[in-house]
Each structure stands twice: as structure tokens, then as C-alpha cells.
Length: 497
Ligand code: BES
Ligand code: MN
Ligand code: ZN
Image (cartoon, rainbow, N blue to C red; front, side, top):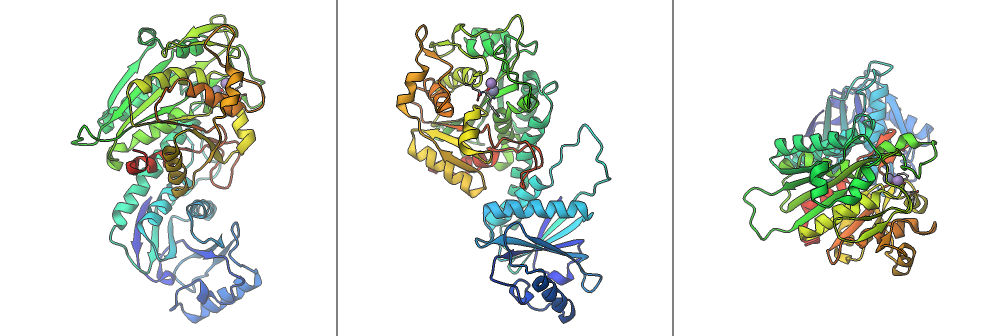
């Protein structure tokens, strides 16, 4: 898709679809309220009539598609309601999804968006969401109808801003990073194995000039990553641990550094504590945290954040078999702590225990982990936001603010000390299972036991990482949740260092 900004008159834009976003008002008696002056009278009067007849007020979720029948240059007009708040990160996301859907069903290759005033941040977001909205995962089937892709998107704005080209490029890079993550999440587990993720990481490292270390089984043993090995023990797919490092060009020693840790369970059957078969297919998405971390690195050289970034991914498949780890097993992981395993389906916290221990040894300024960790978090918060756990106010605030800037919501949940009683073991230092209530919190408390004094935040993305059906923002499948927040966070190191 090609993007451009121009101050061309909308009724002269030679496009298949011209989009007019509308703030909510009590009524639209005249298009003068939405359309800049200068439009020829004849189409304006008919459009006025139509908007009035359809009682269009610009509510969110409402849109009106008009065929212009050659009265003006654009083939069709699309009025999209933005609600009372106008253009926000969230409505920008919805807007672009609507545009993509209409463009798809009306074979629009050339699209223009009449946007009035436009600043760099808005432009970046609109381009990001245009890329996200037009995403399809079609590696394994042909679409029913031959589909036309949007080839060109022009932003028609009164003022053509100076930084437009950079803003567009940044939006494209962020959009591609998110879609890279979605591709990984959407791959079936028979393809996206731990070695597949390690190969993807090695490829990114070569392209982006990153340091890349990958531990195979033998090395994992030498590195005392026994919790990761335990989770992997039931599968014929061997585990991997991935460590990527990005350093800005000409970096000085004084730069802040961050470790991003992503849960990479490529399929979570539950292991011997096997899950019910209903929607077990979705557990191919249990590596969405890992995929988000890889997405962040996929274009990091061009995005060029001014901090050192470590990407750490423990990856294994959780399967039941004669060689599986069992409930009752006691395992000493990299941190030296022993863990009593009471449920093999609480495997995410185990592999993260080893990865977080490794992360603390790097002594970064901050650690952020992303994990599809608990169903309990989905029960608490639904499917659109992550659960954010941190005892570090600045880091927590930086994450919430970074998310707000790019329409990803993170809701703070408490690391309630009292619940730690639930994960005390009679026979080991800690156990991997708490009681039913507060399950997202006990999982987070388990992780906290492995980060020592480090500045750390945990995002439970079990809800938002995957759309079980079209959610108005994404098609069914991986959403790439977390990539935008992390890229935003990396672009403002002063907020967390
Ligand atoms: N991967 C799951 C969590 C999950 C659930 C992710 C739904 C996405 C959607 C995790 O490994 C798991 O199985 N958690 C258990 C923990 C329980 C055994 C303490 C859960 O949430 O039921
Ligand atoms: Mn599980
Ligand atoms: Zn899991």
C-alpha cells in the first residue's frame, strides 16, 4: 500500500473510495459541517438530503456509503461516524477497519481520506491501522472471491505537514511489525514449533544486525533451565531459548536497557493435566508473547529506539506423553529455587521463571514480560485489554501511557502479598498452582519470585492476544497485541529509565 498526503480538493480526488470521518453532532443538516467548502452544488445538495434522510449523526459504528454516479470524481463516498470524541487512537483503529472492510467488498484499490487537520502522531497511527486493518492470513487457502488489495491511500488535509514522510514510514514499520507477529501467531502449531521461532529470530537478527544466541537442549541443561526442559519433556519438538540484543548504532555505555520476555509455548495441550478439547485449537496462540517480542525486533533497526533492547524467549511445546513431567514433580530451575509442580497446565509461569532469572542476570534498567498466562485474567478483564502487574509505579505508568497512545489498554491489577500464601509449598520453595480465585494474581506473584529486586512489569495478554471471532478491530486470529505498546515504550526511554 502506498501512502501520500496532499491538499487536493476531495471532490476532485480520482479514487474508488473517498472516506469522510465525522464527529458526532446533533444532526447533519448540511454537508458544510463535514465537507470543506467549494464542492459543486449539485452533489452537495443530494448528499445533504441523503445524510438527513438516513438520520446520520456521526455515532461510532455508523457509516453511510454513497455512490456518486459520476457527478464528482470519486466513485464512492463513505461517511464514518467517530462519536463525540472525534479522532482518537481507538476511533482511528475502528475507522481504518471500516474503511478496509468497505474497500474489500467494493473492490476499491485507490482510497482517499479527507482528514482536515493532521499532525505527525495522527498520521503515523492512521498508517499503522491501515496496515493492520487490511491484514489477511491466507497462506493456506485461496479466498472465495478474487480480492482486490488497497494499493493507494491518500490523506487529504488542509495543511501538508513537514514530517509527513517520516510519520508515514514509522506507521508502515509499526504496522508491519504487528502483522509479522500475527503471522507467527496464526501459523498452526505443527509449523510454529520452538525451532521455527528460533529460526525466525536468527533471520531477524541477520536482517537487523542484532546479536542472537540460541540455546538448544544440551545448552539448556548446561544453563540450568530445568523448568523450561520440564515443560518441554512431553513433546517430540525440542525446546529453545532465544536471546536477541539490539544496540543503537554508536551506542554509549550509559544508555538505558530493557529486557522484553515473551512466553513461547507453541502449543498448550495442558500436558498430563490435559485441557478439555473445546477450543484447544486456540492454544496454538500460547506463543503470542514470544511472537510480540519477535515483532518488536522485526523492524527495530529502522525504528531505531535509543536504548538497548534484549529479547528473551523461552519456547517449548506442552504435551502429554510417557516422558512428560508430572504433577508432584519438584524441579530446581535457573534461579536455584525449587518448584513443586501441581498442575502441568500452569506451564507458562515455569518457563518464564527460568527466563526471568536469566533476565535479572543481565541487570537491565527494566524488565517487561508478555504472556498468555491465565484464563482468570480473561475472566477479570475480558478480551480487549491486558492485566498489568508491577510494583514499579513509573514503569507501570509508562506502559499505561504508551498503550493509550496506540489504542492498547493495560489495566493495573494488584500483586496482593496475602495471596502469596496460596503458592507456598510444603516440599519446595514455591508451587506452581494457587486456588481458583485470583488466579491471574497468583500467577503474577509466582513470576515476581523470580525477578528479585529488578524493575519489572508483567502483562497477562491471554485475552487480547487472539480474537476468537472478528472483534470489530481484527479478523479472527492473532491480533499482534503488545507490539505497539512496546514500540511506543522503547521510543520514550525517559519515561521508564
Ligand atoms: N495458556 C494458558 C492460559 C490461557 C487461557 C491463554 C485461555 C489464553 C486463553 C495457561 O497455560 C493455562 O493453562 N493456565 C491455566 C492455569 C491454571 C492451571 C492454574 C488456566 O488459566 O486455566
Ligand atoms: Mn497451560
Ligand atoms: Zn499456556
